[in-house]
Image (cartoon, rainbow, N blue to C red; front, top):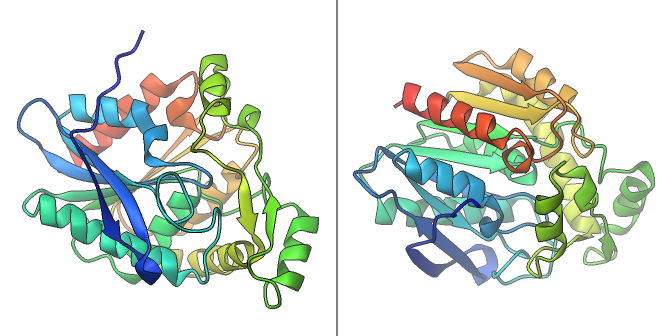
Length: 281
């Protein structure tokens, strides 16, 4: 049985609109090579990445993760933002906190799914001080949550009832092929599948902006995606990869679902991530 790394630091910081956001850090046993900041996906929290934090700390990296607003142990209505800028402000405050703890190490940022969209948008607007990014299963072409009728409802209600909340989860079975992982997900009290209509319309605007501006990316990128992702179509990653002009790597895992780091080939995924990080130090 895998022994997962235990966080050595837990605290909170102030995010958008004064919300208290939970964060934690995992340290390697020896001298750290670099620090990696983790931005989780929709309905998740930073403890959903035990495979990532364990593999990367064993490889010599410090990992910081936080629960975004409306997620996990952080404040805020579940699955709600007033505007996309809230996510930018939260990541900015989070990275400032990471740098406060580790001012001298190279800084990488990893974002999965919604977190991948958040990170892409963030670095397209403020790449300063970021050595590279790892983006997993980004919602460039969402198919699991962005059902046409939900999009239509969101667009109608966003301006008049922005906090109207709907069940939008894609279901655990779409995330991994590993039954043990699925059972753990389904029993996780901190996970949720609610989103507001304003969250939905803000995400659509952010997706369009990333697609429009991706050629302006200025930092090296590792893009990973499961070929059988039923939540965010792998063609979305292929689309943006073809338009990126800087140092770029694309890894597609045959048969893997939405969370390659939690799927059957997770060991290969983490080996690829560590190799990419080591090569970009």
